[in-house]
Length: 196
Image (cartoon, helix red, strand yellow):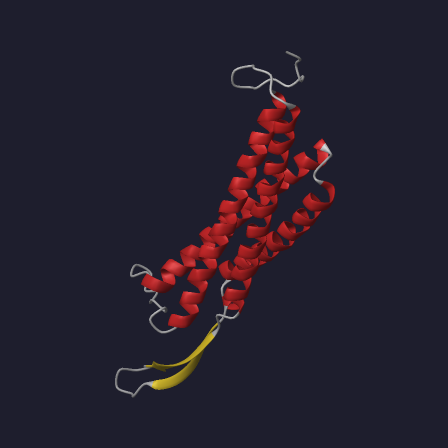
């Protein structure tokens, strides 16, 4: 029996070169899908957070003996630094996902140096997404429950629509972060196969 030059990493038996090409094609297709899903999730997360502004008239009591005064209050993502950070990171992740998807389709990551750079950038984007999601989720929890120790009142009972938009946006961003985790797992698998 003629050997193909490629041995199965599990048991060392020869395998045809066609299966090696099929694995590379399958890995590339998985990468395209994951990058597209990361792009779509971050794009929708940014849009949902951006349109989630809300204005309400809130009664404010200045002194116990005086009647409350109606004050118009606004909720926008620009008013909280954690949400600004969240938006900046998700916009960066969206642009990065689109660029690397185009690069992956056009170039197929033929260069090992470029492949390593993309893996490192994926890791940086993943870290930033987790940091932004953590910061935004912390503000969201304060909005839903308040903090009795610091006398911060909950605001999501007033700005319910805004809070729902923010929560949905955070969930979408977490989905994008999961796509980057899967991309890194795929890259680790690909590097492991190269080493064998």
